[in-house]
Length: 367
Ligand code: F6P
Image 1 (tube, rainbow, N blue to C red):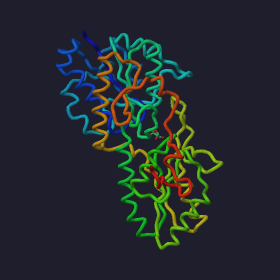
Image 2 (cartoon, helix red, strand yellow):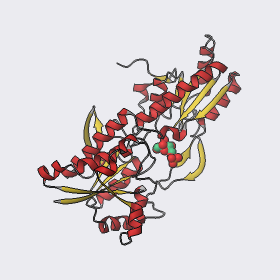
Image 3 (cartoon, rainbow, N blue to C red):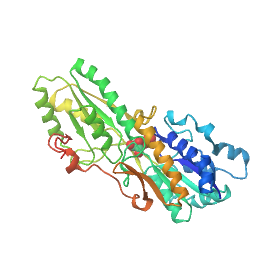
């Protein structure tokens, strides 16, 4: 049997995407599969996520050249070393009720002769994959988001590299914070969940960590700082997730632009927290927004490994005709989960289990 598969990356980029594309390609084109399973694959990369497959004109070679890349072992050989996505990405939503282009999408999938789609994305991109699956398109998903907030999997590509970026930047900030005796408030990404702030803050020894799952009292933040600075420590690092909010308040919205999936751009909380600390305590405070640095750079060892394993598992799923599922990590094992179970839900930080609500930090009891 011959099968044409297409891979796309959607939503925010992150390190690990290229590795996943490489390993889908390499495993699909492994000659032993053709021999042992009587199946031979052709692999296409779709440029710019859902946008590419909607906008391509299958009858126009120039347009195909722009949006469709033929992938083979030689093309993807070194991809796993590099961050970002060589396939490009977009936040295009084919099912946007204001501009529904799903019919064009399905038509193009058929015209291009694509038998199965490998969709690498977060909640929004995989939500589209699930809708397509319900419409009869064969899809498998690979989880990615530095926020690590997808349900059904313990790991999503990009998270580990982002946590390492947070740690490295905080290590750098410490010297200047210490020299000047300042408070530094570091804003991490995390549109809904506090995983990046919590893990980034824990591994870099931040004094206070503020997460969206537990609205904070500004007065308590100041009290904790007064206690610490009373002990002759002259500087502190506070990590705050972009979606964290003061008790009774709202998330800080950066600008009013709303993307195709209806998300606003969040940000600004670190600046607020730093200004409030300075006003209420008199401690000199600065803030820094790590922003897209967290999504940049080369993938960590963990992201390279997970990309490899997820990519291989996605091809296994196709061979086993296990469509409508996402590869996942569960109890340390690579497995699969129905897309249906992961959409419209998020994996948030379990405050009771992982967060110390008195000290605004990770818990000090684990067992
Ligand atoms: O969902 C991933 C994420 O990195 C969020 O943490 C962040 O809020 C958002 O994407 C930023 O998106 P953009 O790249 O469109 O600014």
